[in-house]
Image 1 (tube, one colour):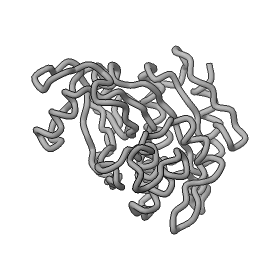
Image 2 (tube, rainbow, N blue to C red; image 1 turned 90 degrees about the horizontal axis):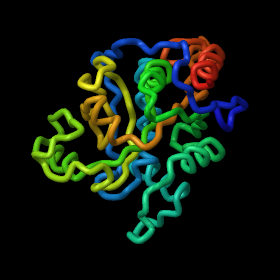
Image 3 (cartoon, one colour; image 1 turned 90 degrees about the vertical axis):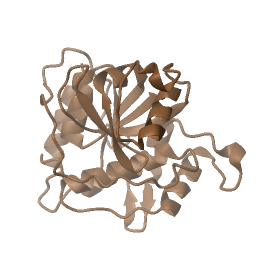
Length: 251
């Protein structure tokens, strides 16, 4: 992992560690928040805040995040200036992650410093492993206009699929880029669904959709979320978790 003493490399295909066939978290509420992302392009900041909240939920607790904190981090990490729409240009994920690792994600409860690493965005096993072992996968996708139209038409009560042209242009990127989180999945085939945390809710997509839309994928560990027992909210001892993830993210 970067900025924490460990070196996460991108994963190679064929690494022996196998992801669970199903990751069912329907009994856990990750409690994602909008945090201004319906008004400004602060999704890279919101992704970090919701990664904190989702990981905490796995440990049976929660972390408060308000709009002001998320927008302040967005401003500090990207150069956005509130009230100046021309500066609302979104963020570059690796730069935002590096900033968070060095400066911290500042909340009323304190500062949270992620350790992070990058994996091959097309390695489905690695993406699933990140969700299962770290809590969430921090993803960058290219949205199509059809995706946005379908979400609006159904109020999000839909499963996004790769080539559903009933809602318009399916070209990846026709609606811009977006940062969101991988949370859980029903299986690992193209038609199985992935639960994504975005825009204050859980949006279902197929793995086939994610395959066509994804640009980048990262894993995060928040040492400050380690419980008094030394266990991380996903289950393992924090030191074992770090070692295991160096193993499966390094070819």
